[in-house]
Image (cartoon, rainbow, N blue to C red; front, side, top):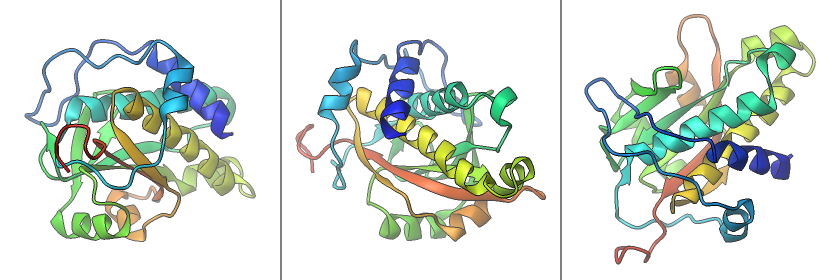
Length: 218
């Protein structure tokens, strides 16, 4: 599953182009980052990094990673065949250029981030995962997943979350960022993401930042 996910993610990176992300009054400028020319380059260079340079991550790079992850998940698990399980991604940001501190859900159709939680939850997250400039928080709907498959909906939701998470991580690596993955979920994140009657659940996390020493800072 991991190799299939990585290949699907990087195929989508070649197609990335043009538009910017927006958060309320934040609209990043400049061209979107482009992926390297070969699948093998990113796969060969990947490694898990849990300590990060003290350098902010541009919001454009986070948007690129979020969008690439979502596109890879949708291509691998098309909705007409597999249904809508409410899969999505949020960002917890501490040091992101162009985005205020906080937790934000990413809306791929609008290419913007909307705030969902405050400082207390973010402090707890850093101690639970990694002291990175940003965390990518993959989530999905338990209700939608189980409605389509009562017995196996949750397991399938986890696989789709992994698809999105690995794809987003590889997209981030292709821009020069580094990071690590965490399979454990957080009930506090799940509660902050829930809206209305849809029981969104946090499923998967990727810590993202610049590798230590690569920019002369640590």
